[in-house]
Amino acid sequence: MVNITHKSSTLRQAIAIGELKVSKKETIDAIVNKQVPKGDVFEFSRAAGLLACKKTYEVIPDCHPLPIEYASITHEIVDLSIIIRVEVHTIYKTGVEVEAMHGVSITALTMYDMLKPIDDGIQISSIRLESKKGGKSDIKYAYPETVKAAVITCSDSISKGNNIDVSGDVIEAKLKLHKLDVTHREAVADDYDTIQIKTKELIEKGYQLILFTGGTGLSPRDVTPDAIRPLLDREVPGIMEVARNYGQQRTPYAMLSRGVAGFIGDSLIITMPGSPRGAEETMDALFPYILHVFRVKEGVRHN
Image 1 (cartoon, rainbow, N blue to C red):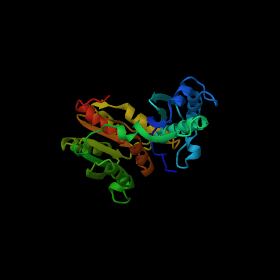
Image 2: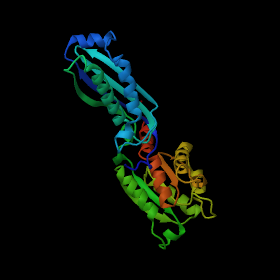
Image 3: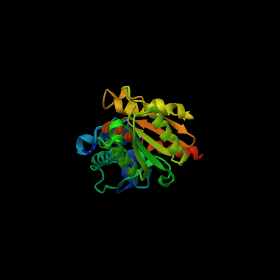
């Protein structure tokens, strides 16, 4: 199975459709009048389809078990065809496209099984995904080429050249996945004044996204949030709330991070943990979703 532990749970929706075609009008009449010997075709097949949606992971090896929060199955008669429509919703880390198509398949097969004693010309066809929503594909974020990004590592040892800046590498690699190039990368000491000076310098140079890693913990030298917070024109508490919540689901120590985030003018500043794992998890929690703020700042709205 694909590893989805790094993903965030969001509302996911999928609609799948399929067609079951009978060979004679008498079959349609029997369905509508509930005269099929095996029972009510629509109700039995709907129940089977609902079970199929819920149990998809049990029969398709790479599908993850996920909570089905909503499922709807409808039948529409068009001449000698019955159009099956299955809609599935979940709040989870992966989509429900396969669950919706599996629901259509089993609904159609159940109908076939119930109708075959009275019609030997039934065909099932055109099972397909009609639409899906949720996940990264729906996120409307800033055009990458408009965002000038910098990554600053706050660490006494790294700034002196005694250690390798692994966290900075992690952050830069994550940004590249979202087509964002880091045009300034630097390590500075864990010093209040130095951090403030560097922040102001980057603001003056027009950097719109400034990511700090390191100095967000509880040791005496962890002063990054203390240096950044007084400079913020508008703090955005929800950013770090999301990051800490994401981290807390993976390690009990995420609650100890004092990271802050917000705007200085039109520049977004985010402070994140100095450990490679902490930096990676914060990036996974926030990106690409956080890039939407640049569109909001430009006055672009999305439903």
